[in-house]
Image (tube, rainbow, N blue to C red; front, side, top):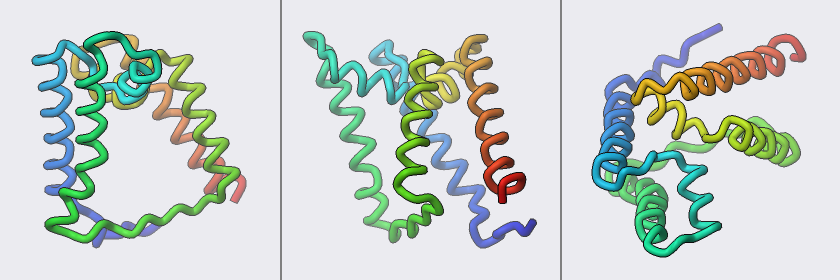
Length: 143
């Protein structure tokens, strides 16, 4: 195993994590809402009066952030080592996990853990373990 030291970016990663934490904190402090993407998008699929604008604004910020990044740097090249069938299956499995886990990685992993939620700790431990096992099986056991 070799480490790609050129891809080791602790300061950029720290800044990104701080921005995610700041956005999640601002959403819960000013709007009383959890920054879980599946819940935000799900709320747009079953809209309620007075509940759409903040959801659209949050999603617009997510979509606009790469454009803002482009003002300062080129976007990194995307390298996906899987085909369309594998990506489709992975997306369906993630959605299944989101439904059974009552939330996504951003809702449980970022917001739930920071609030000390035992349910979010269990959910985060579960999806992290599933990810570790999947990578091990696909890259090492199955080749």
